[in-house]
Length: 375
Image (cartoon, rainbow, N blue to C red; front, side, top):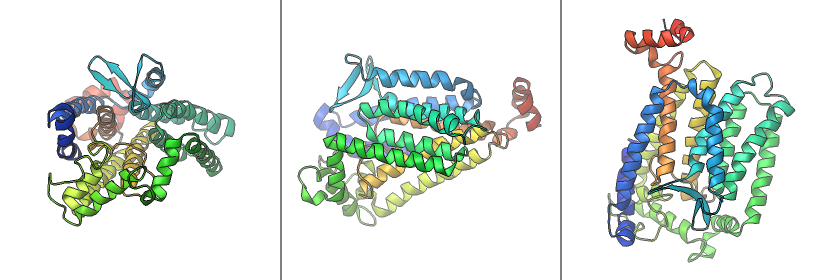
């Protein structure tokens, strides 16, 4: 339902931009539909893959992700758009390695933490290597630059570190150092400082730095309780920058009103509930950490996007999962949803025991220990 809502929203929010820039009102929605199909393939693949196998593939997946993050920074390989190097191109297809790096580091950190149960509480064997691993990935993402993605990676991995049993003193140190790094990064780049200034007082520069946030708030306020009607948004006509990408939540609020936004929030809440239920049903630590990581990633990204649009937090430019236009983000999040389905399917207390007996016998032959548990 979220994916379908995303297709409808991308169309209504993008047809004006598509018609102006490409002479085709369906330009963006056709590509988004293609990405949705690719994401569906990724979902089915990971759903049918026993998630236990990801533990053995964690290191190669992480290496590929790091190579992708490094490649975008190399002139002539990485593609620069709007002053940022975040894309790689393979023929007609361009993608962002940082979106797939979110899932890669969740898999890798989950496998690493699951194998270090007795050393997580130790400073030299737990906190130090954890910080080094996250710093390498986060540092490569920040250099692109992509502060929003880096924040999501740090928040998600820190949640995994906490769930795995890290001491509160280590978490406090991690949060303090993360806050200091964030402060330094904001001062290091003018555009980050401008975003913070526009968050504090967008009215001070309504035609400059404060333009985007003010137009987003106008869109939300114009919708009222019931909205202007589907397709009737005015702000999507070049008032809200990125109306079909980062700003889809505001367009939904303008066209469907507060009731429509509550419906979207309800879908996300139900998704999180089902995902956590599948996660808690898995009795092995790797499965639990994997599920918690994916749920945290999607939850943090959702909250950061909605918080920026409602002026609860500064704008960071991250897409809204399932709903925003963007191929890499959609395929990555669909792959994550497929892993959650695998948790439900192959977890010890999951739904696999309800599958046909013949399939259960085949699984038991391949996995003797799991087969005995199923029987």
